[in-house]
Amino acid sequence: MQPLGLYRPGSSVLHRAGAGVKLISLFVLALAASVPPPSIWLLGGLSVLVVTLYLLAGLGFRELARQILMIRWLILLVTVTGLLFLPLDVALANVTRMTLVIVLAGLVTLTTRTSALLDAFEVALSPLRFAGINPQRISLVLALSIRTVPVIAGFAQQLRDAQRSRGGRVSIRAFVVPLLVLSLRHSDDLADALIARGAD
Amino acid sequence: MSTREIVLNGVSVDYGNRLALENVSTRLDAHRIAVIGANGSGKSTFARLLNGLEAPTSGSLSVHGLDPVRQGKQLRRHVGFVFTNPDAQIVMPTVAEDVAFSLRGRGLSKSEIAGRVASVLAQNGLGDHADAPAHTLSGGQKQLLALCSVLVGEPDLLVADEPTTLLDAANTRRIADLFSALEQQIVLVTHNLRLAERCDIALRFDGGRLVEQGDPVDVVGRYEREFA
Ligand SMILES: Nc1ncnc2c1ncn2[C@@H]1O[C@H](COP(=O)(O)OP(=O)(O)O)[C@@H](O)[C@H]1O
Ligand SMILES: [Mg+2]
Image (cartoon, rainbow over all chains, first blue to last red; front, side):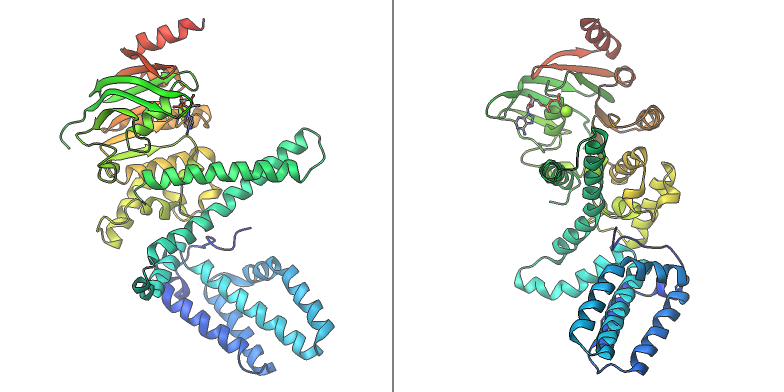
């Protein structure tokens, strides 16, 4: 359960390409997938491109399938609502577009170190300096968020295990309150660590 | 930074309802300094004073010639701090990135940073995990990573607050051996009395007071006998 920070080391062209180039390409391809009126040729072509890129990155069909499987509920939801309110072809086009963009974004995170992505964000955000916003701060916050997801997930797991081992029913209140307490204590500790590590 | 002296003059820390430290005075220049005492005796407060995470309510202190309160930022470049729970001090998503984080803002080139990171990870048995997400490491590996992230900054003083409390025997041993090999001055807060005995001097806190300071084997011996 971690969207980012899932870098797969490798030496493919995609791994070696700069993070900025990849982010811009992602942006352009996302526009290409969503702005023009959908056609079999456009979406089919993009699908072929996506498959090719996954193979080029040495990730293969397996990883591609895994990425699609990860968003299966989202795909289901969008398909069902689409079929309810839209003509069949439009509904299918929408799902295909969305899947293409998400899978492409996944490709970027799979082939780019988080630190390189954050550096690229910093560069992209640097015009904001004039507005008094510190891009380094923003990228630090992003990094911390990515890092914190598995930590909080670990707390949740601990609490579930503790409740189960005491044989009790899993009660929401007996879950949310301690989870909040653990998370707040964690944020205190994290703040200390950031100061100790010279990030203040 | 030629001195490796830690000096406290009548330091008290008051948390409002109770004194966490009470009138502590000492002068320390030993290489490895153990800090022992019961839960709540003030050990962590003492440790946190040393890099300015806590400020004295009264009294004064200096660490390697610097005032942790007024010169905290400068001091923290020379003082590495290892916490009990490594999960809270690993701030970047992957192993190498976390170590590199410690070298931010030091004006080093990318390749210099990469080189230093790789070498500290290799020295501490994490060389194969450089690109691993931090959350996939074991508890012992996480503490090793936390230590790598501190050591890469080449601190003159290492303060560790119960760094082995969450570790099993094998990992405790690994961390202990690592500490023994370090040239830096170390302040080691620990409940592991065997580790304390391996230090050059031991301090014992009780109810916020520094009640004993001396040869670790003696200090630990008397502490143990009190509960025998
Ligand atoms: N942030 C705080 N606020 C209030 N009281 C605190 C705080 N931190 C520590 N204390 C209290 O100060 C005393 C010393 O704590 P501490 O230095 O953490 O002891 P030790 O590390 O030896 O267990 C304890 O009684 C503790 O409850
Ligand atoms: Mg403590």
